[in-house]
Every structure is written in C-alpha cells, then in structure tokens.
Length: 358
Image 1 (cartoon, helix red, strand yellow):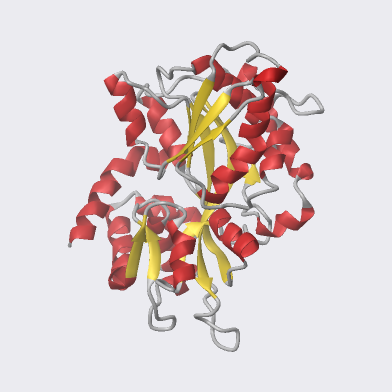
Image 2 (image 1 turned 90 degrees about the vertical axis):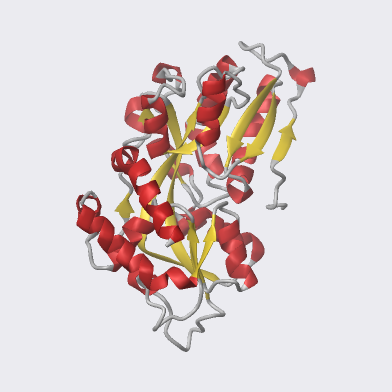
C-alpha cells in the first residue's frame, strides 16, 4: 500500500460502462489533506464514484489552509470543485459567501429510512457543508524514546513537561488545538477551556504553557510530517491527527503510542467553492460519498469515525479501539468549538504569529 501518495493523482472513471449520469462534467477536482486520509477517501469514495459515473477525479493535496479558496473565489478563477475542510473553516467560509449552499434534501436517508437530518451527528450538517468524519488532534510518542520499564507520557500535562520527559516536541504551526491543550495541561477542565480562552488572561495562560516548551518545538504544517518527525527521531512526541498515527502504527509498524488524554475532537466536511467549475458534479459527489455505506467504508482504511449514526454498526470491530469516539478514549476529550474558532481565529492567529517571532 503506497501511503506517500503524490500531491496530484487521477482516478479514472469507467467510461465504457455508462455516461456521467445527470451531470455533464468529465472530471472533478477534489482537494484533501493527503497521506492515509486521502487514501481512505480514494478507496471509499473516489474510485467507486468514478466507476459509477464515468467522471474522472483529480485528487489534490493541501495543508488545510483555506486561503486558496478565498483567493480563487475573489479572483473569479476557481479551479477546485470539492474541498475537505475543518468545521470552523466551513462556518467562516459560508458566512463570507465563499462556498456554495448545500441542499440537505439531496442527501440519501439511512438504510432504515431515517432522514439525514436525524442520522448525521450533531454539527455534521451545515448550511454550506456536509461532514464525513470525526477525528482528533492527539499527541503521540515514540516508545523507543520512553521504554516500558521507565516512565511514559500519559497525560496532556506530560507533553509540556520537558523535565520529566526530555526531548523535542512536534507541534502543528497553528494555534488551534495546541492552545486548548496548553490550558488543559495547566489544569483547566475541558468543559471550561473555551470560557477561559475567550479572555485575555486565558490567552496569556495558554502562551505561558507554550513558553515552557518553545525552545524544544519542531513545527510541522502538513499532516504527514508529524509521524515522519517521530519516525526519524527528530522529536520524541508530537501533536498529530489520530488517523496519521494509526496509519504509521498499523501500516508501517511504527512503535508509536497515542495519548488520548486531552484530545481535541473535531469534524471534517466537504464544501464546494463558490463558482466551482463543476458544481453539479460536485454536489453529486457529496451525495454519493456521504451515504451510510460509503462513510463506513472509509473507516476500513483510517481510524476516523463516520459522521452518520447508521454507519457506526458497519465499522469493523477491530477498528473501534483506534477511534477517537471510543468511550475509553473520550474520557478526557475536548470537543472543539467551531463557533469559538470562527469568531477568534484571526485574532489568535495574529497573537500566535507574534509569539513565534519573539
């Protein structure tokens, strides 16, 4: 299995089997985060959609920075048709009129007839977006750096304790998730994190925690970098997307261990940039890829939870322990607040970038 997929790949439709159905597009550009995650989407969504419709899918990777969507729409030169984004970005892009509204009536019901509005989990259906997965930002460590006969990291506080657990830390170069982790490491209960972070004192408190490890941070931006930093020994622990670590554990047999304490649970969703060149085909793709079976199929390849309730029973049992929504993994989880980040993202980005330069 090739997990180091190219930035741009073509999934070809079986044109001999039939035309493109109700749409006339011959290709569709679908943009996502790369690595094991995009691989799971290609297998569960892209290939069967291309086979069914005859529409070629061009799969492109990005870092999750949605600035290109804004730039494409504002310039009137939109080249992306469907993009996988985080929930806070979906809300903000919709508020700014940069992505298309989505008619939820086009989505299929659950197999038992349950309408999509009741079958999708809370927050999964947005005016301009439809969720596919739940995922978490966690931190993981390399067991070779902390052998079992000694102390191993076990709490979110341990990530910020370089005296008890010396070594470099990998951290995404982005304030979201690490700010919440910093406050939880400083003793703020998950249910109080956003109330605290909405104050100047709370922001100062989070940065004070980050100051403790600043000299030991190795920054990453693309999701594939986090497990690679661990594998290369450049860091002894890193924040990461849980599915990335799962891929390294299962597919590459890496000696990594996830610490679920303080995980940040979030959603990823499909959006369509305003003025997308193949809008109708994009909507057909979203409808196809978010039915009950397709969402369950994606969980065969990566440890992200499906966004439909009806999909959970179809997920293979041996995947359940790796899911962020496993009850044991949820004991000290923080559910990311998309409205908070939609409101405060720019302000905290500026503060974070200033801190980086200090």
